[in-house]
Image (cartoon, rainbow over all chains, first blue to last red; front, side, top):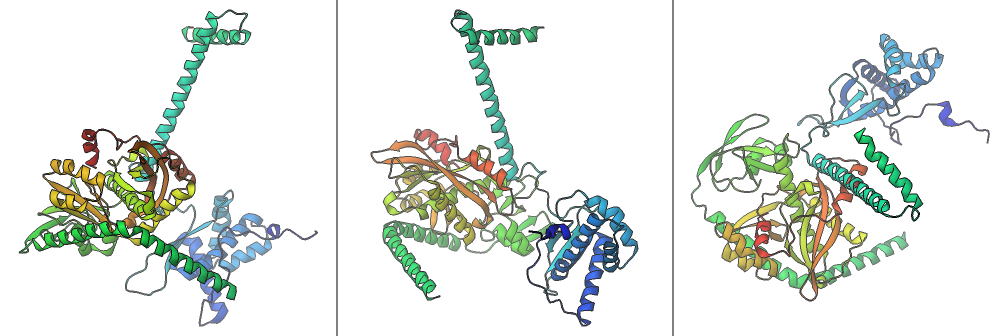
Amino acid sequence: MNQADVSKLMSQLRIAVRPTKRNLKNPDGPEGRLLKLRKTVTALVKHERIELYYNRADEARGYAELLISNAIRHGDRHKATMELADYWLLEKQLVHKLFKVLVPRYENSNVSYTRMFKAPRDYPGMYYRKSVLELRGNPYPVLTPDNSQNRNLLHNVLLDEARKEFRREKLANLANKLAAETENATASTTATPAQAPVTETQTEQSKQAEEAPKA
Amino acid sequence: MAAATKLLKKSLVGISQIQQYRNIAKSAISASNGHRNELFNQERRRQQDAVGRLEKIEVRYLGLPEDVTLVMNNNISTPFNCAQHLSEGHCKRSALALIDGSVPWDMHRPLQESCTLQLLNFNVSDPHLVNKAFWRTCSFMLGAALQRVFKQEANLQLHSFPGPNIKSGSFVHDIVLGVQNWEPTKAEMRAISAEMVKLAAQDLCIERLEVDLDLATEMFKDLRYKSEQIPSIAQQHQNRVTLYRLGDHIDISRGPMVASTRFLGKCTVLAAHKLANEGASDAFYRVQGVALPAGFALNHFAYGLLEQRAQKLNPARLPNEPFEEQRQMQLS
């Protein structure tokens, strides 16, 4: 009953997180692993698009998301958030970038702040999977092909024709409706007014409508 | 655990029973189909043997990564072989070849003279030739899927498919069934769609073979509608008939088609409209569906709009119209 709503206490991540932990090995132990992740998060904030091994990128992504969402949530007057930013960003000028550039950029966004793509790996080479990690809204050209512009692509041809047919049907319906209305109007003018009082008003309306374009 | 294994075994037994039943039912069909495939194989081998002394041709490849000249074997090397010299990516991605900048050419059809070569995929700037070939392949695959799905009791006979028209919103295959009042349910349509998806997953190579009139008549002598169509087709193409094969399904088509069934991505077979009665107990049906090439992601709402449109009867020429007009249709 009186339990606190967890989502109000801490930010909800907008990415899918692996349910089990990743045993990223490092000769320096857990600190070494964290230092590596800190370097990755710093590089991500600095360069906005980085290419690296998949596991490291996926692990660092969650921390970057958390950092940005906390920064948006609490602002730069919050001690804990400032400490967090100080910890994850090794280059201290990036703390300014976080609060002055990234927070305004993502304030009103309702999707994740980062994107991750699988990248091809060199052959022959290290067999680790590679990936590209980037901040949304970065200034570089997009990585995914844009299939919406070329109207000759098969799905675009199909969609365009479907749209044309929809409009054609709509116009035909409209024309039928108008034809029916004018028929009604002519029928009611020939009929005696006592018979159909409702249609009389209609005929008046249609007369007005006919007169309107002349005026 | 024990209960689960019991269930599984039982279901396995059920499946094998169904398969046996199917095999018995289809033995008659498969006999004539096997004969046709045998003739197809023999003729292909004969044509390969008839090449004789190897002659070299120069194929000028235009495109990425760079323009190169390849020295290939006349009447043996195909555009696919040229792609093999370029990269694995070219082999996988290319759906159709373009000869001398204008003639669409199947990926697995031997080249006949020195020429320039371009390899087309679905993402080129003007893909209308590939799209057309894809749509035709969809119709052809639909025929193969129908052949696999129907039992022998249904008396399915494939009639033909009209030329590809993407703007009509659906690809079409006209069939004759032994029932006059078939109203397909959603589940039945889904079963046919599933068969299409299975064909795509099998990654079957689509083979092309040109045969002469006599052989074509011999191959299709069991199929009434095909043997009716063959003379007029042959008359228009110097007594030659172009055949396509997918797995063990052989059909007549002008071509070209895409290289493999792999290129079929999202696919739905949506409707079977009854066109007319045929004879005492048969009837013409027009089966139609909509598909996208593999690798094209379209959100389900937009795809739903395409599906809705594909349900309406396709206005292409009907199979039961007079024969003279039919000939035009057969050119597809």
